[in-house]
Image (tube, rainbow, N blue to C red; front, side, top):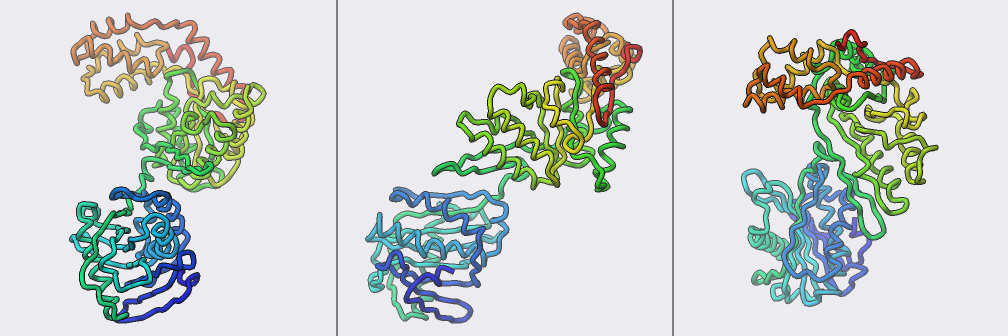
Length: 489
């Protein structure tokens, strides 16, 4: 506790209230009175707040200030621990500020907690003033309120009420314990209101990286999956359940830790990643290079290291590196930063425990071979163009998603006219036909929509054959959905 580092320390007890008075070592012209309603517990979590508050005391205050600190942990921390912030402010930071920028003034610091009913609980109060206590009521007073709970009531608009309440409480304790009479409430100059809010842990992975005298803040989005196992073809669904979903849900030690999904654009690679997350009841952390790469030397690696360290704590999430073609082989990299980036990711994929990691790519041959070996990536899902039955399923799902009525008798027509279409192109066909039919899908509207697409069936068939060849050459566990030409037609 700061009192251990102070001189002339005195303590008094009366009906559960504890009063400290001491002279700060670094500001000997000042005296500090601290009133505790709770047993204050020093802790590092609250200590980490001090730099966030200190930066506002580097210059003279010129207006009232509200500092919102986002931290789910501090919202729930006990009053005994959060009261430690009052000690930290009163011991060094505030006395030094007053002596440097506002010598005629004194400071009143309080930790107050609001209730749902609108009342206020005072847990801890500190007064930082010159050692001449006879003129307390005549000194201009800076008010620093650490406020938590009942956020609807804790606002700068109500700050004058808080100030009067805290001052009257302090004077009552000083009168009883120290026999100090304070005839009236001094003039309040400025107020700093420090409040706490829940961090958006369910929306972002937020990382703060110290860099020189500043911090770089990076936010990685978290979102729930919007697709389910029913959105996949039956064969792919069964294989994923057997190889991925069931082992992970049962906590099996042999469950996969990484998955690569490959296939041409539009066949549902990202959708499949979301399906896996949905089946495992996980949220998705989407890691994109644009969120962590920097133009400054060495900073990309530093940010990525910190981001991956933070992500490892999110066990109820799936990490998605969509379009992971940027992780090219190190022999092909043209910049040393890319080599370092891949090396960091290789080490991350090797570490356990970590969240399930899924990569998607259109060009698996570009990826660094070390990325996709078992232990880092345990299974590869190879997806081709959909067969006839799955094309019907895609059309029905698309129509349902857009609130469009699709007659069953048109399903065969759609399946026949969408040979070698990707999943995304079938979805686009349904939307285009609905636009032509003014919200309804007719055969005429479908034919009109189909005429707007140019599909090279020979090229698509060649891509499908290349996928089949890749599946045969890949050394590891593969889950294949690559229908042959007869199934597509």
